[in-house]
Length: 137
Image (cartoon, rainbow, N blue to C red; front, side):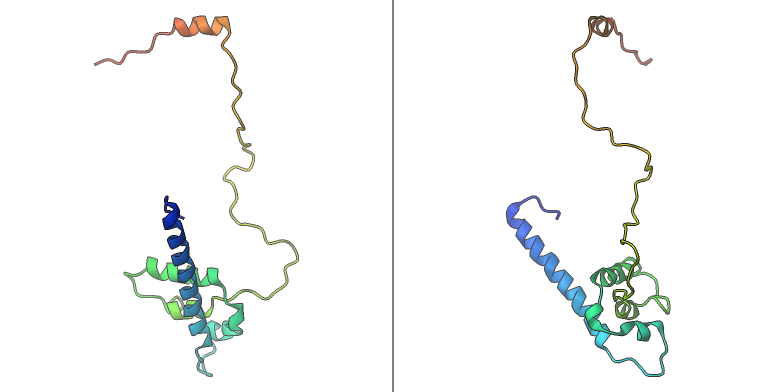
């Protein structure tokens, strides 16, 4: 959510839910559209059951289309075909589905909370005698 006002939060939430519903309806419309019997495309095979439509896949298809408005779509990347292919997979996983987003350096440990302590007399003396560097003008 991007708003900072509690009244606007509900309006933004309502619009987000409405936008998700519209994307779902776009995908459902394309997945229920009859395809030609002669067309042996990947989309015709992927259409299958519209109850298995994927909101994430449909949003991904819309984002791709909106990010490439200036160019003509490739033969296999038009919006209708991508919405038709936006279905969930039907295979059974052997292990848990893990996120593909990993930390850049997995060996780097989080720093944790700072430890605050009082200055020792030697550190206090050193701080008082510190002279900052002057820049040459």
